[in-house]
Length: 276
Image 1 (tube, rainbow, N blue to C red):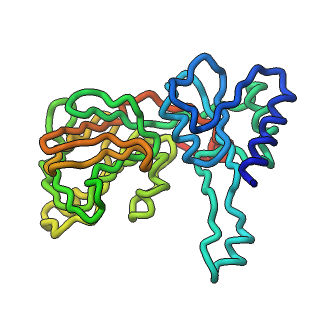
Image 2: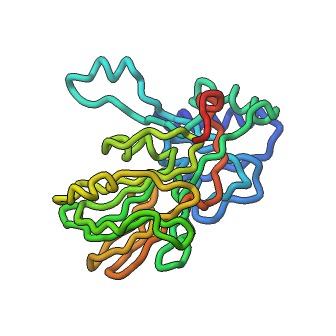
């Protein structure tokens, strides 16, 4: 009900503006989003992520967190259950300030941030989906050991030794994604405008001491990460579990930050963010 009320409120606000607009349900998103001046997503980070997969760098997006976490409820029910709701890290507005933020955008008083995204090649062929948060390369069954190798390259030259792994998978995140699963796994929060990628081998099995420091590092904008998959089957999860690409033994995956940026309005970060 809270989410539905938020949608109705945002639509009422837009109706009062001198703009042409169209409402599309998340489940109906299927084609690239073009020919518009602004995309507004109402939901949480997942809604914005799904829209971002259909957007290039020509259209900015504003996310409205429809059901943000209420600190009073978290404190009140902490002994009974986790009352945390939507984090909305990528959402620049809530229903409380949506009209103000929208007016500032329409009047040209606000510029979007250019968030780095991740380009993915599978067997040298580009995947059409750019990752805004992260990718996870792993077996489809979490109880199955993933076997893979990787190294960092600069141009065509190795920038790290080849690392052979047995683990529960490999996660690679952008700066925006560094506050999500990467942080939960013990990673580092990156400056929001950083063009670096951060990677972490998940739960490595008996890594040699000589390579342990290479299991969690950064990939610079002029570098790429080359991954070779050595299990019979596996999956590339892009920004969660809804977008997946199957992989099999012998497949290679290249990831880099050489993808079109996503222009996102984030008023709460605009003045405090610096590039890395």
